[in-house]
Each structure stands twice: as structure tokens, then as C-alpha cells.
Image 1 (cartoon, chains in turn orange, green):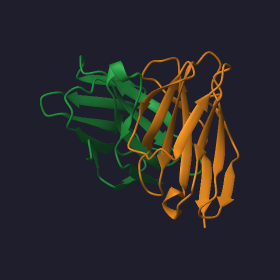
Image 2 (cartoon, helix red, strand yellow; image 1 turned 60 degrees about the vertical axis):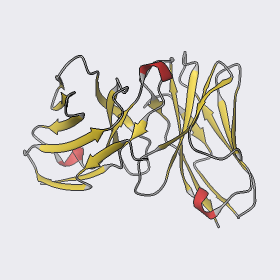
Image 3 (cartoon, each protein chain N blue to C red; image 1 turned 90 degrees about the horizontal axis):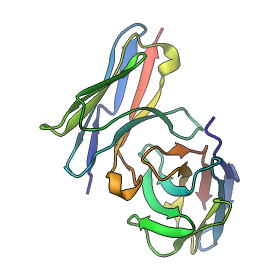
Amino acid sequence: ETGVTQSPTHLIKTRGQQVTLRCSSQSGHNTVSWYQQALGQGPQFIFQYYREEENGRGNFPPRFSGLQFPNYSSELNVNALELDDSALYLCASSPYTDTQYFGPGTRLTVL
Amino acid sequence: QQQVKQSPQSLIVQKGGISIINCAYENTAFDYFPWYQQFPGKGPALLIAIRPDVSEKKEGRFTISFNKSAKQFSLHIMDSQPGDSATYFCAASKDNQGGKLIFGQGTELSVKP
């Protein structure tokens, strides 16, 4: 186990709704990254937060947004959900090195 | 743009055999190359990683071979066991980006008893 936890485990939403996913980083890690993993694909980088500031963003639209809190926990928010947003959302924490430790993910289904 | 290409997509190996998964990258600025193992319903777990200043790294039954000139790296699993059955992902990142990982598409490994 990595010590990275995510909630909820599963979530079902309808198109157009908004969703918030949560991540608790491993103790001592000040960097959190979020990834989207579609079925049968490798994870794709959404964005990274370092000490509460966004520190890099992948090719995702602005309706994907995030927050990192002083205790280094994090949220991923997705507005105006689309069917293609159905995926496993992974949070990874690291002590600002390349070594990232992944949580178990949140499975989001958009109907 | 696919920056890390992984093959094969699936692999079946007999127990005790050697599993080999290959990856190729395009961006010569990449300087960190990890392999992750993912079981169904779980997040990816770091298996082993290499930097381009070495050509091989071994940890237990797992070995990474790295060919900088060919921009390729591979994972070798020696004495493969049924418990190794999982999906394996290679990835790459640039050190100065503090860990934005670019993943390959994954290889589903099945080790038959």
C-alpha cells in the first residue's frame, strides 16, 4: 500500500453534472498529480499541484480544475460532464521527485 | 502525439519463462523511465525505474534494459509466476517537470501455470 487514499471508490453521474474527487497524499509528500485512465489505456496526465499551486497541465479542457490544500490533500473537479469523461481517475503523490505513488483511483461513470 | 509506444499489447508466458515488454520513446529530453504494475481495480504500483546514465538495472526478478541511442527500453521478468499476471505500463518523464509521467498504452501479461 502506498498510503495514498482516494474517495469515493465509485461514482455515477449524468451528462452535464459536476463532480468532485478527493485525494489524501502520502505523509511528507508536497506534490500531487492527477491522471485519467480510460478503459484499456495508460493513464493520461491531467495536472499537478506543488505546494498549493498548479505546476503543469496536460491536454485537458478548463472544465477540469483542481485544488491542493495546506495539508497537501487535493481535489479534482470536473464540470459539465461528458460521456467520454467516464474513466478511472488516479491521484499520485510524490516528494517533488519523479517517483510517484498512486492511489487506488475513483471509477467515474457518466450516463 | 504518442510519445511512448509500448509493445506487445498482450503477452502469454508459461510459468518459469521470461516475459519481455518493450517501449520506445521520441523525446530525447526524457530522463526518467519507470515501469508500473497494475492489478484489476488497483492503482499502478512502481516496479522499477532507470535513468539514462546506466544501460541496465536489476531488482530481484525484474530487469530494465535501456538503449539510449535507439531510444528504447524494456522490462524483463525472469522466472515469471502466475502472480505476475497484471497489466504493465512503461512511462517517461523529464526531471525538471517534477514528475509529469507520459505512459505507454500497457501490456496485459498472463502467466500460465
